[in-house]
Amino acid sequence: MASATRDRDESKGVVFVREDDGSITAKDLETGLARGGDTRAEALAQLAEVLELHEGGGEPIDDPDAFLREELDIDPDELDDDRELPDFLQ
Image 1 (cartoon, helix red, strand yellow):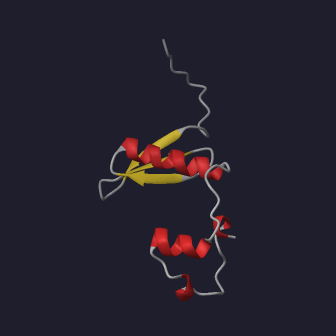
Image 2 (image 1 turned 180 degrees about the horizontal axis):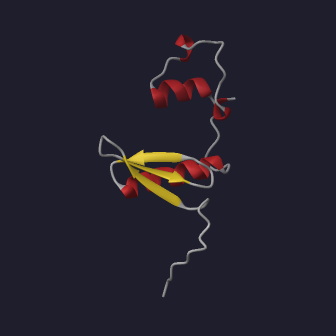
């Protein structure tokens, strides 16, 4: 049987926030990372994916320009060349 304790570490765990538009945000207290969805389960699944990527999981992107075109429908030739790329595209 599980029990609650008053000595919980408030810097760990996940909190859920209902947004004004009705969506739910799940936030990991340890990392500060957050993701949203239409339900708690969807927000938590999205957060799990973000945490996996944050911890080095996932697949590398071999061709960033092709990824932008095919997956995100962004033309890399129209992007500002002076911008700093996110870590996963460097």
